[in-house]
Structure formats: structure tokens, C-alpha cells
Image 1: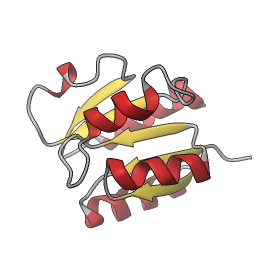
Image 2: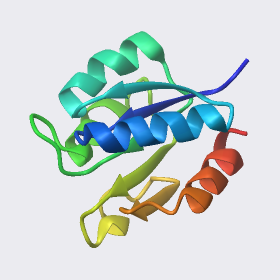
Image 3: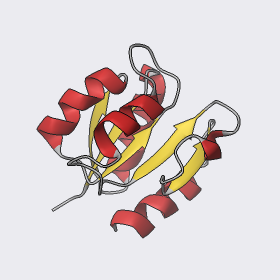
Length: 117
């Protein structure tokens, strides 16, 4: 069974790009436009890994992480931060990777494969 990646990002074009990229590499996907929507999708979809943007409407990525993943029921889900903000490696210290936009898809795929297969 294919592993599922949840993409949380407010840039619809980037989300479509990542969806196609992950599908082409054998993964299923689910998406959310920001951290607030991400909470509902996480409960429904139970992904194996999350790519998380930092700056989004309603709820930023770090707040979503602290509220839902850090110490909570979903703490074991690995996170790859993908953002256009500088200094992203300091945003979520427990993330398995931090990639700046425009994303290096080779590095992203490497992180995903090393983390969830």
C-alpha cells in the first residue's frame, strides 16, 4: 500500500505541483490550505508524513505543529518544512528536513524515502 503524504501550503499551484510529483513517485497525497484546515485533514487522513509551509493564513505552520503534533496523539508523524521564509531551519527543530522554496525535488524525495520508504 502506498504511503500518504499530507501537503499543507496556501499556494495552490505549489500544492498541485507537489501532488503530481509525489503521485509520480508512488505516494498518495492529501492537502490542506493552512494549519487550521490541516487539523481536520490530519484527523481524517492520518498521513505517514507532512510537508509543512510556515507562513499561511488562519494558522501558521509552527502553530499547527505545536498544537497538533508536538507531544500530541500525532507526534510520531514526521514533518518536512518547505517554505520561502529565510532561517527556516530554526522554525521546527524536530522536523526531519527544512527545504526552501523553490524546492529541490531531488532532496525532497530523498528525505521522504529515507523517512517513510
